[in-house]
Length: 242
Ligand code: ZN
Image 1: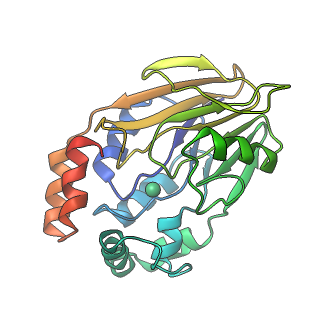
Image 2 (image 1 turned 90 degrees about the vertical axis):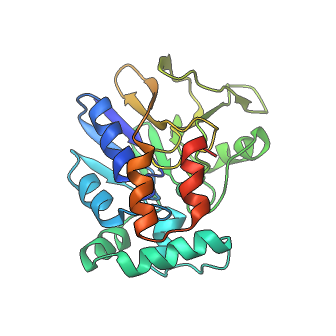
Image 3 (image 1 turned 180 degrees about the vertical axis):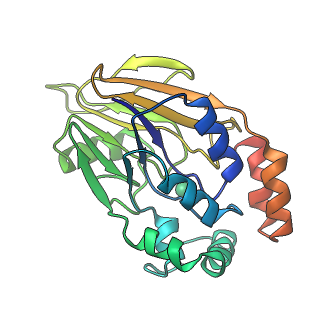
């Protein structure tokens, strides 16, 4: 099966549509949370993702906050502002969809979590120390995560004590080694100084990971953010991918 792996769409329909056109055909879609927050198109993104084939979609921290399921105090003031905006914008149907998202899912050889397998909604896996600890919290060969908006890969080889970070090369296909924690990066708000949308294709037979970047029309989504009076910082950061 060719499985589209996407994360952190953040209500950016322009980036999402661009990724879907670039991805080619796929048999299933796995979405690693944060469908909403920051961007101007929460309902549109939810509808688009809901229609993807064999969808598995888990809960992110922005999704939970937009439902008022977790407090907003842990978010910085501008992120909070975007969450309040999203809370007002969400339709009842969108709310129901988000409210039914699981925090963690196991699909064959893969565990899916937004932040980490240890703390699925909140923890950031940003370094080998945290990554190494997290290998004790899932049993499958692989764990796919989002949340940091950084495409990153951590491998813990048999007999080793410490995971090794292996940054993936854009537009390359690599074999996945058991055991691996891997992040496809963010569709709607990349933060690795590359403003292109980030996603991956996981081939569950070949056990390969195809990491892709694709440029989207940043101006298009920025115009809708300006019209919605979303925080300026979130509008600007899309240009530089920070
Ligand atoms: Zn996010």
